[in-house]
Length: 634
Image (cartoon, rainbow, N blue to C red; front, top):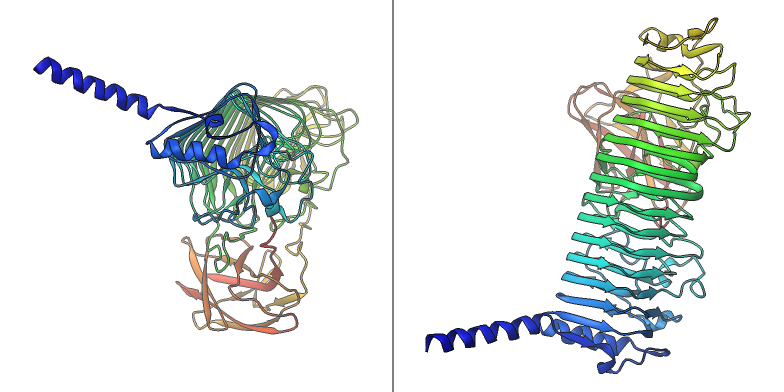
């Protein structure tokens, strides 16, 4: 009797296992796979059947299956056999308009049509050696409105996702978007697309615990881009053993959408080739989110316009209407090791805000060779462009050919070898407003009249074990304020070559007013700080009026500084609305507050700005109104 019970139990377990891993061939549900019939409902029936049985594999045999929108469900593996193609319908009316629940800037604005979609599902897989084809090269070529072009795959708030082996080709919009997903594995995938506008490869957006490996990318826009289109950190991401070639955007990128920020990201053992306009590596946060603990290593680049671009910006665009960004978070702890670039065009750069530095950056074992020369912009005429859409190409003709750093602290450049294009007369490295920097083992070819390193408005810089490949007038040129705390040792100096040549300090000519607006208020104060008059904001508040000169969303931009050692909050009041912004910097910088109300042109808005905290610590120089394009899609 006991043996019989055990046998029955064992048979029951076997049937349960078979049920959990049951296969559902889409042709048994009526799918034709002839490339002409719309097979959406037949494949969806197979997915629904597998989901109702608590999971299983939906098998797609060889053939071309024209589809609109498929909804993936918990426990279902969509398996594409070799020769199977899911082909996106050329008519957006064959797609179901999907309203996702998860809050995000991408909701509605970017897309509402999808080939494959899931929200709130778990344990879903897309596997096999087949292809998902977006039909985007022949159709959906109009860039705007973007949300009429179907995404290929969007997975929202899903867990335990596996995508392996498949080819994702010719997306009409973003190819593969993961939003607020956790525990994702992408392995052995090929993503290739062409066409105009916003056809990213893989968008890892506000996700956690994602691995991407052994995959290949060739895309119109960015290949792998990490985003934070809501207030969730994008974190714990690894990318390894991937090849990027013929990329219209950047290969590896964080941002531009960066409300939640980025933490714990590693990229290793990758090849990046043929990027004619943008960057191989672009690390950016411009919407208030933090960026911390980023590691990139063992990366080879060829024919990449800009090898490395690291940027802290001040766009501060909210991810939903009725919101505004209340602080600018930190960018720090970024490591780049064993990176080589040949046939590059433009210098790499690390650029923070005038009021907030990027901190703790190390570039070690770096080699770069340039194929195109540029004319040099004067070292004191590089614009701030803090509000602009960020991209490496925004800074043209930088005054160094290999690496330009501004508003950086705790910087290490170690064992770097740099070769300019023929005829380039710029120095190899330029540090501007950079503090606590160590340059060790810098070896560079430069014009005979140019230094290897130029220092401006920088302090506590050490240069050691460095040299030019041929004799130049000086190894280092330092403006007098930078020379006072400069430390040099163990450098190789040619006969009749100066180790350090002192330069008279150049006046600062970059302007805070590098955005368009005619709605301005400049305050006259009793103190003059860094050439600007300063008016103290008190608790009773500073009252002023500004005219509305542009339609749409507006930012009130306050040029201010905080003399306290701790962050101070500034309150903005208008039309019965109160908003607060955290001011943490002790130099002049913009504090932008996106207004929660819109006005028609030619009306006047009355503002009161007051300090919440210690009186006398917050100074203001001017208040501007600028238009903010919250409808622009990245």
